[in-house]
Image 1 (tube, rainbow, N blue to C red):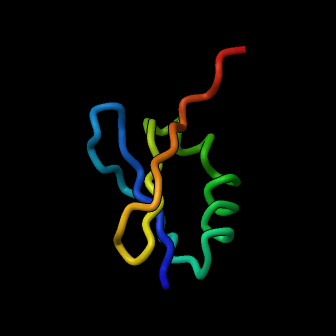
Image 2 (cartoon, rainbow, N blue to C red):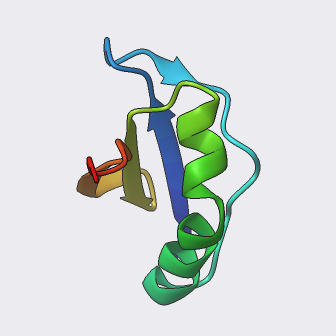
Image 3 (tube, helix red, strand yellow):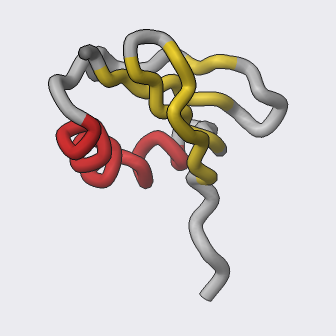
Amino acid sequence: MTWTWKLEDAEGNTLETPDSDLGSQGDAESWLGERWREFADQGASTAVLLEDGKTVYRMDLTPAEE
């Protein structure tokens, strides 16, 4: 199984995503956890986790208001 992320902007357009072919869901989630703020700063508002090309779940990357 291959786990990857797809990043989308607020309009749902796919953004360029760094290579993220990872071996497990945990690896994929850790990978995004280390980078999500950078992606949000670059205009990503949603991350989509894919397992072998199939959507597992979508995650909002908008930081919570303090």
